Length: 408
Image 1 (cartoon, helix red, strand yellow):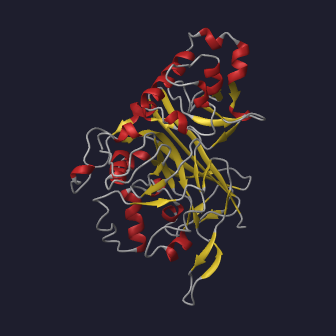
Image 2 (tube, helix red, strand yellow):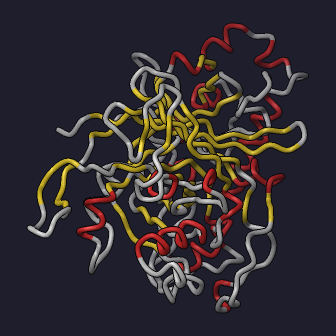
Image 3 (cartoon, helix red, strand yellow):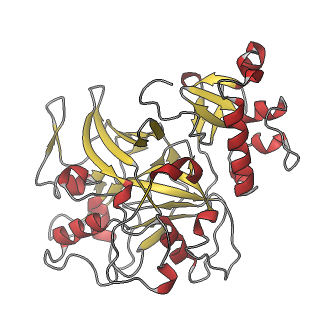
């Protein structure tokens, strides 16, 4: 593998791809090579009595994910063995390889799951503190409940798109003067740097998932760009919270990286004070050392990195988020998306949104082409990248990319 590659043999992520003239199939990726799992199954290379090849001949991964954690782990183990340097089955069979191996540049990557529901949390203490300092009381930035529970809201799945799909600038009501609101395109379009986990197991209405069980319900992680229209959001926010300022578009990376692949990168999370209630207590490390970068590319100019953060900063971790989500008996389904909330670190270079980076527009960012940004402009492309790195092992997520088009 070339240096800096996100997808070594130790990764084995899962996604959905399509070639010209073919139907969508489940896939994995090694380096710049996309591997057709349906093709491998038809050739008998990853078959198992537990499930037929057709489980990979779908438009989403939901049917595969429903098979459960033993099936995910079994397929990863078979793929690792099949593509090992000393295995000749594919290595020495050019005809077979041609049927199942494709260059990443020759395929189209699609939405990996059919998500019935989407929850967005608010789990970075640095992000919550920054917003509290900006818009409330600098001396008492966090709301009273913030350290006691993972705050979140239910969003829409209809406008979640895969990397590469452009998003139009949204329109909405904006109140910028005492005379009342106006209806116009947002002037404060923002990104939010987030990760998200995908659920791999369903529950029945009335059931809850404990922090001890939670990772058995999590299939893997993706990058998540929660686009936000800050001026629309500000006017509509009270009393019920996010609505049109949030639901016009979110962007995810196409490859789901499993918790097994991330195992070497577990780290402790921040100390939680005061002590959380019993149902949110947990054992072990459930944060991950995932380096996260955000770049802005204006038009066809070169890109500029505007943020360098890390998933390890999350105050509320995944198992707490899922335990809280289900604590009231709310049922979950396979393929649901649970976003982390904006991931900000302790210094301005690690802030995960333009709202924070420019401190509500008061500190513009200069890009490499000489232009400045307080928020995102039309024809800007937002690029998010994430990876873990330790000694000689690098596990990456690829990118979540979207171009902002003018309002319709």
